Length: 378
Image 1 (cartoon, helix red, strand yellow):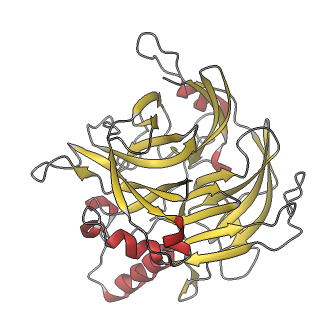
Image 2 (cartoon, rainbow, N blue to C red):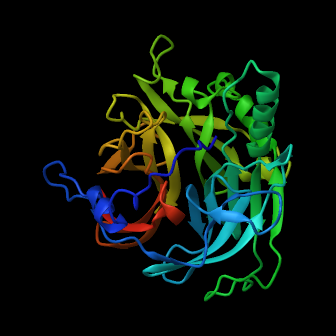
């Protein structure tokens, strides 16, 4: 679930351009470093947490958590972006050097008392004419106080949904992002049932993240299969091992038609080794996207550093994964960042030879501070 915290952010420490240049680091021999430029300008407002149940009261986004686009090359691109504190997703036009915020597409209407409950959207994908947006399916802490427990139960229910969103062809103005046709929105609660049916994941469902509970943070679609990347749980290499010391990230693979169309199909869990963070803890998946027949994975800590501590380089890394093997190819480390400024979403833009250019979005600074980086494939 989204964590509420004081917004120190990039701009409260140094100018965003100066701080984000901290992405550069010394590589192993023979590899080039990640290279970052100034964040791209965002026109108009990317929406985040709603202030109250009234419409049009959403704050500026500070928890950007996912983005996917309808095309993989060229500009402009029609995309959907999610902030995990909001109740939906937003149309974004990505141009080379800037982003244009478009209309917000509300997906949930859950309320507890007089407070709107967030979808806690953590993953966005696009395939075959449709966008996909998933809630984290996570769980706040269990509480002995009955009122707090009831509220946390409502929060968990609000996030345990995934949505397929079809926007009619030509219905998005590529200049403004404005819609001229209504999206077709199909919700599903089937993913929660499929998760609970997997032996590797059952015990982690409805358990808080701090106890290696289940939280989705990345999704991708390839060849009709939905790949669901978990921040937690990380799965031990052997039953006697501590998974946070010696484990693997988990990816649920299930047919899209099983989630949305009622068709029967086999689900499975793939394990992938994403190394360790700087505290020697097994890393989970913080975002994933299809890329050239495989996937790019943004790996990061299951549990964030203690509040107030900066994010050291090497906590987050980019990997390339083929979608089936337990090993993934390390591409680059990311860092350093001020406290509570965390890489959350990766959008590939283009490629020149072996060098990939991508946009990196952050949880913490306003509107995700979309920052172009380049790194090299192996």
